[in-house]
Image (tube, rainbow, N blue to C red):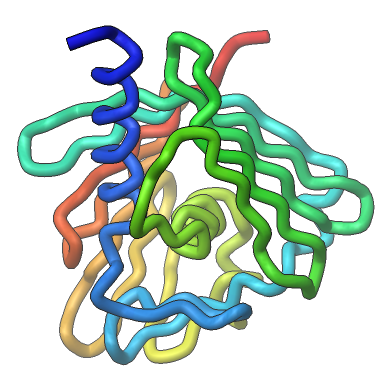
Length: 186
């Protein structure tokens, strides 16, 4: 099997993991993290304007780990641009979301069943301030104690986020996947 086909197959799996919530639906403004829990992804906190980062993402699901390079930029108006690539440099997907506007994506590799709303939801849960996220969550609470965040409701904790100097790890207990964000040194 050629390397390009292997990368394409790997990319399909990566997106399947990133959009593991496919049994739930997303509207233009909200993502259903579970049947009773929604996250509004329509806006970006003002303190995130004019920010950017580059991370290597290690995505683990059912004992498989895949690696993706991600570049995120938020302009001075709160519009988001996200580019996902293989670590070899093949572009996978480009995502744009203007403030209070719909998500637009362009897939560079043929990938089906990908919902970019869930990708944005995971990024928001990791990077947006807790006070802002709390106002965006419906049906759950988010709290941060020290270097740990958790999203929970009466049924228990379903997402944990652990921060360290080297990396940040989001563990989606409900959908059984984990994403580790490692900063790219510039």
